[in-house]
Amino acid sequence: MYLTRFRLNKARRDSRRLLGSPQVMHAAVMSGFADDADHTRDGRRTLWRLDTTGNQPVLYIVSPGRPDLTHLVEQAGWPTTGERWQTRPYGGFLDQLAAGQQWAFRLTANPVRDGRPKDPTADTKRYGHVTVQQQTQWLVKRAEPNGFEILRGTDDDLNLILHNQTTQSFGRRGGDRPVVIRTVTYDGVLAVRDPQALRRVLTAGIGHAKAYGCGLMTLAPADAAR
Image 1: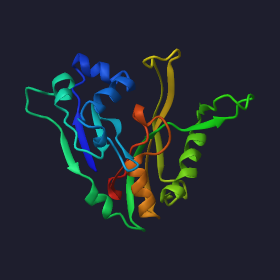
Image 2: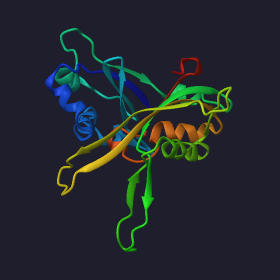
Image 3: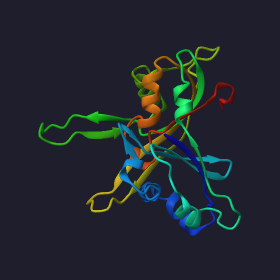
């Protein structure tokens, strides 16, 4: 597994196009892999997430294979400054996860609930959670099965902040209706309870809409919690 960081130059036209469409960004990320096995392998898959530090958009990618993002540098990066991208092996970090460790985490997700259709033969519809309480409980419910516990602060409140709540609508190639997804970013502090389950989440994602920039959880030292 590999963890990649790529800084976008948002002043460039192609960068604005990528930032404006999760579908376009997904295609650009997938174009960084020469072989299907490089982005899907043994239950692990390529995940990506866009973060904004200050006013600077940064793309994070976790993938089974090492990506080549030359095309992104040329289209939406900084080709004349020599700044490219940083890719590091991820397996060593994953192997060192152990029960009891505490980490700051960030996750952009698509918290939804399934609606039961009146017609049992119809496809199940998903509805985005809209309140902070609903979105918080969505993650809390998934913490234990995925090998972690969200810690509480001295006031007994969850050490968790929700921000950057957005609703995105975009066309899907060959689709009759636009795709609409509601996303939210979670920043918090967790404790590892089941390292194997947490490794699975970090390499396969959590929740729906993974192709559209959701599901990638990353960890940092707990003293880096925002």
